Image (cartoon, rainbow, N blue to C red; front, side, top):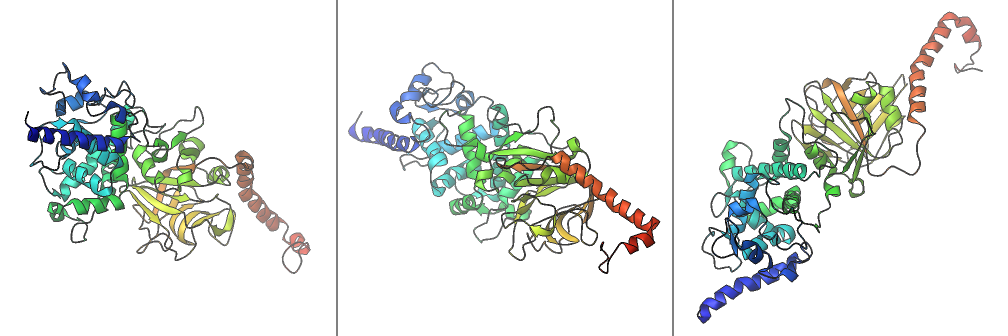
Length: 487
């Protein structure tokens, strides 16, 4: 081997050692394994390998992890196998084979070297937004160079679908389900569309409409997209960490997907699935993201406003959601404990959201402080649960006549700038849920059953007073002073 050829071969190995140093925090033993530790041991006699054990094909990537010899940071089940959908494996392979450790490549290689694997993983897991965008562009585009907007959309759909797939395969759903209500648009497409809506083309416009999907997205466009849609990088980390089963993962799944807590023996078909929970959870304050506890569900507690009030008051921050008769799923986050009183409550951390037919979050505008409202037993002001807007014109309203509500916004809610969330302005609903988020407060409220019982008596007591006044008008009048109250 002449001196020039030796320099060319040594340069990728030096680059790999540098990249391995960057990966040390995620793959702690990669420094120990060195440039040839894993691939060399695995390559001998393995079907699908090239003549040199330092290269692998997409077929082998589907069968096993190319660095599974590094057992210190990969589990015995580190092979990809069925953990990732074939389309995502192919996209990862494309991103790897277009990596250029030497800076001298004239095009993508037919196979992936260990240096390319290490470099692409380093960029996706620990790289800058610029480095991540280079790999994502290679994963999305059919050819070298810019990707069309529709290719970025398909990549996003594959990425979101792969997150659901790998979490289900690895049994990491944390009590949630990947199922959804029949007849509703796929949640994968809904979340992918929301992430894609953050993309802006080179002219600063969003790719709205079929014609704009043909427009090119270069590295700068993708890099800016990653800033506006951080879920993209997070989801890629989930795919890599769970797909390759990294033991010492720096990714905390609890911040992405909270633990689901429902009383034993009280399971039910929730309106939420793994994607909608992950999306809403990402907008909560960080200290509330690790656990969701069910407080109320019509499927378990019936269609009763008294039951609703009794189970959600003084229980800390919570998420309220419902499904109208047309299949629209929407709700709001209440950042403070609900209290039954005639005044508005809450703070600027509250927001409204939509899950179906589209996913979106609507935060406060600062126009007013009408964040939350809960009232019961009043005769002159509305009785019900509301968020945003004003009396009789709420962004989200659940009436005391349980099963009825409205979402009014012309053109948007003044408090949250949300559009009409329901299919019809005045709607009916059968399903409603309330989930407390974060850890329960130290001080426990009065028993929900006692409070519910008291609330259930309010209409009866009001009715009884009216009857007494009707039976004994003179006697009642004689017992009252000038103010109308007992003297």
